[in-house]
Image 1: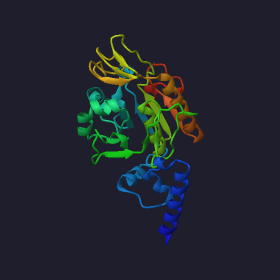
Image 2: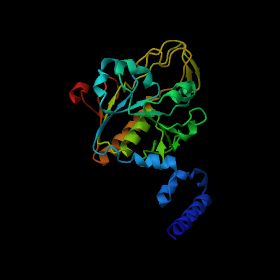
Image 3: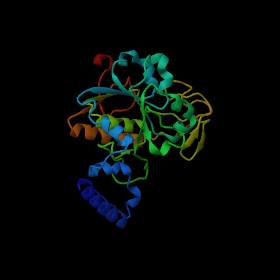
Image 4: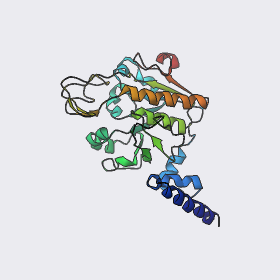
Length: 276
């Protein structure tokens, strides 16, 4: 009887949203709002809710400033890593607790590496399953891949079970997941927030193909010769950081920038070594 009433409500909701042109946006991830049984992947997402309530974590960016820090100090901390961070193991001597991919070029060009990577809990959007194959370490997220210039861009999700929103940088997904997991303090490192596009690079619209070494990341091979990447719009990233900072502040939580230098001034700065 309970589920019959919930289903009636759900069908009524579908009818209303269809009538106003929103039906295409309805996802099975919304079923949780009606208390219906969750599928396996949804149960896994829900298992992360407030898992780390009142704890701290570090989100590791991939800027060259990482080379200035002793990352071994993070071995026993909760950490988020992105994209090709696993190639930095020799310097770090650990793999991140959580690993996230958003960019289609990274997913396509490094699909074999990412599919074989088993050392972290992995998160990526369900739109990437054409090249990234979910395994026992993978949780698929309902990432709303919407880069239109809509008012108040970007949206910040406080409920990863429903959706996660893009903001011009994969680290925006990390911030939303850190919020969902309940972290009280989040420390950013390697967020240099500055990019150079070499004159020799091949550019087609927002798509860039390197012809030389990478000067924007911790390794010259990161987006080195032959690698594809997207125009790194720091103005758009900054909107995302401002939005994330606002949501953490409202909830009495805090995001700090512990990067060694760099151009990101949205978050309060702290000195990395002082945290240990």
